[in-house]
Image (tube, rainbow, N blue to C red; front, side, top):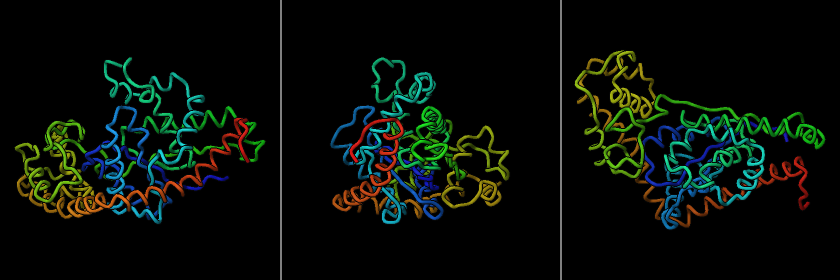
Length: 345
């Protein structure tokens, strides 16, 4: 069972996918299809670490799937599925609950941020979900994971768990002819000029679906008029655009819009600044409107079409789950043998 180079990543179905999700994750998922074998997962088990309305959860699982397909992910060439259809994710997560150390989870900053001051009321799932995230990756023995900066800590935990499992069970791994180590050490893939997209109303805050102002974000389902209006109303400063990146320091809104333009156009930030440096934001925004509408408008239209065809979306998820389960079950059977659990053969 030598590990092949394989990409795994997932997106939570928590509604209102926006430009930050697209540029920070999905656009890179699409590019990676040309160079890697890819498994893309709608991580619905992660979503329920906080309470979700059941009908809304069903809808958003399909919406994320539609966003994958509308953005250019090919579910026939690669695997697209929702996590809960492959039970090996949860099964391996329990093994990892027994491998990971309490101190490791205590250092996870996202739990502290999401639980807030009332941590005693947070679910056990919210606390332990980094172990499930590790299982998501390692149940496919994935070697690469496209992550944003805010997820690097979780990938480091997955590496720690993989290493400890390999060390704890090294004799058994060798005895079962799995080589010197069973799990690979997954590597992060952080690519693109706008991996962290900020609010259109406040360049110091990350673009978020939870922001009360809809003008803080461009939703993937926005129509052309909404996209144009949001870009035109995006916060800027009175200075013209600089000609070099150094000039973007201490100008978070300008930096954010330049990063968005660069990512949507496939250019580097220096190239964008060479083209627009010295000009006023009015002209730059007008060009950005045209670019954003041309890139995002067709995705939103296709998403709406796909979400109305629930039978097709569900069939994509079922097919992907069947193919994912083949890989995951092989890993899980090997893990049971390594740990010493008796399984049906």
